[in-house]
Structure formats: C-alpha cells, structure tokens
Image 1 (cartoon, rainbow, N blue to C red):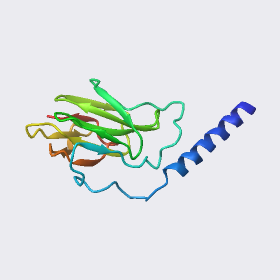
Image 2 (image 1 turned 90 degrees about the vertical axis):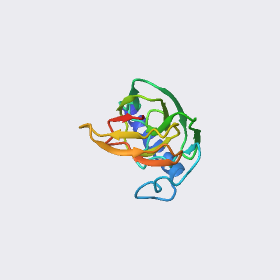
Image 3 (image 1 turned 45 degrees about the vertical axis):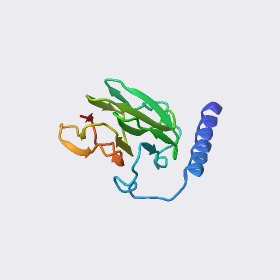
Image 4 (image 1 turned 180 degrees about the vertical axis):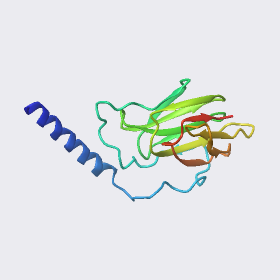
Length: 160
C-alpha cells in the first residue's frame, strides 16, 4: 500500500502545481470569435480540467491522420496558407495538439473542451464542423482569423 499512497500523493502534488502554474484570468468562455487576424494561432490558457493525465487518457486524433504539432498554453503556432488548422488540449502531453488539414472530411476522436481553429485556405473555402448526427454546428470562413471552438460536440470536420 505505500506505493499507492505515494502515487496518490504525487498526483495530488502535480495537480496542485499545475493549478498554480495555469491560474490566470477566469473566463466563462474563450475570447470572442474572429478577433485575431493573421496566420499565427496563439494557444489559450490550459483548460480548467487540465491535470496530470489519468492512466487511461487518450490523445485526440483524426481519421484520416494529418500532420500535427504541439504548443503549450500561450504558445503560438503558424497556420500555413492553404490549411485549416485546429488546436485541442491533449491530456496525455499536457499541451495543445495542433492539426493541419487539407481538403477532406475528417472524423475526430477524443476532442473535448474549448480551443481554437483558423482557416488559412485559399479560394474562400469554408470549413464546417459537424455533430454526432451529421448536422452542421459551426462554420469557419477562410479569413485567417482565429476562432474559439467548443470541440466537445464536434464529431467531424469538412474543410473544403
């Protein structure tokens, strides 16, 4: 039993440390949509639910797979022209995972909480975010603005 007790203590200490490092201005919802023009996505604060990943946590993914990168809370990521970029919190890495999409339909797995999307596609391609029944939940125009997105109800993306 000492091992379990030590592990629980370690997790509690890590959670407390993470909470101290991620405290900031609390918001009921992320910043307003479309207020950050340009090609750089700046990651929001870590979700309030962010804590050391439980042993059974699963990383967010898409099918088909695409190129990905990681950025910490407050970090930036360049969304290259011609791509639809989406960030989501990855509890297994303790960072935001950014996905770089080109024209296709993608199924999402393990995407939860709020993060961001930026549509840097050319030719005015509008990205659509779809729910479990296939209904359109939100669109993201190709205007290079960064949009806040609640990924929890989103099951798929069609970015062209």
